[in-house]
Length: 278
Image (cartoon, rainbow, N blue to C red):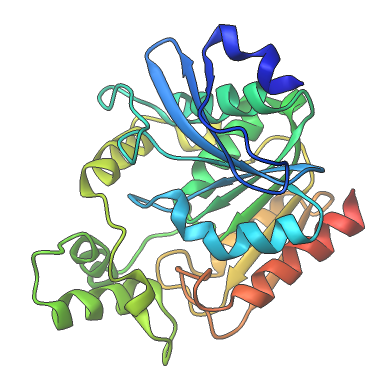
């Protein structure tokens, strides 16, 4: 079993339930210690969350993927839960190396790497740095190449200010992350400002050209049409640059949060593409 084979090189198995249940692992390598949840069996799919947020954002999607016959791997970013490691002087390559350590500890097979919002940067960096370990790339709300309006930048910053009055905080979350008419309460909690700080610093320390292409594997971009942080122009640029390997699926009635807004459509789009390509 792969898990047992790695236990002496830094992987600690925290639970050993049946294969249909979650397995919790600690992957320790160099100065990183990453807490991981693994569910299901099948083609491995790694889920990487948004800026300053944890793997819990995938609670709905992970079960839909498991039910569809996939193995789901959820590493927590450094500074969330039991995950730890250096948080200064990092690049996106360091964060992608966390994902690589996790993927190699869990499976011998190439993985599908899924990045949501900020996680799309880590996913694309992973695919660029480790092409032999990348079977496919899925980007949910993929930004990085267009400017964000100042009022949206402020709303994004204020989303991490849980000290604000609740109504003011939720309005910031709504403006930055949710489409018109969608309720932002699902993201009232789950904000880790210290994590967002080092993630933003890692982005600034990493040249855009080192990760923007996202490697050479097939890529699906699910583009929310009402995304104010990563507007559709980002997806259009990827499609224009790499038409032979990029598919863009645009999604109405969704913003940058995407997952709590259109959970069924997101899952159906991912599963359909995976079955079509692999």
